Length: 186
Image 1 (tube, one colour):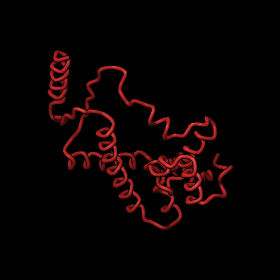
Image 2 (cartoon, rainbow, N blue to C red):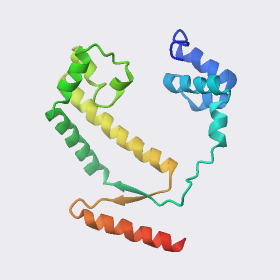
Image 3 (cartoon, one colour):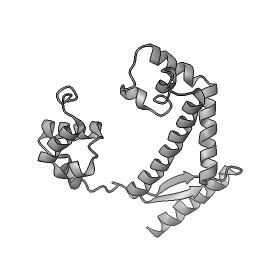
């Protein structure tokens, strides 16, 4: 499908999607080429509009579920994310990505769009410093964590628990207690 529409601009592709699936076109940004292409592909392969498929889904769990989310106060979470990135750097992330870069894999390859990989291209091409790349990886990782919270909150009725880092067992016991109480009410 990518090859079939390679000569289309993002706007032309988006307009084509809008011609048969206006709802999906409203839901997708014109520059989100990958998802626009996927919506077109669904239609061309199945004859069904993506928006109709989504509308037909009830988006209800099959089972009675108590979703548990573990969280930390944002400053602590972000500090831990930053430390994790530092550890990845210490364990050879730069060298790993450099080998892939040297093999000729393009920044447009899907595997190179992951956080921790995509940021290195500008460094290898002399456009950014190593410190800038590391800060970008940290920032993108923190932003991803924020998007995960948003996604979970919009998809499920999540019961969030602050993790007690000094006594994780107390977190587990609180979660189990609440699940038991929830189950007894059912």
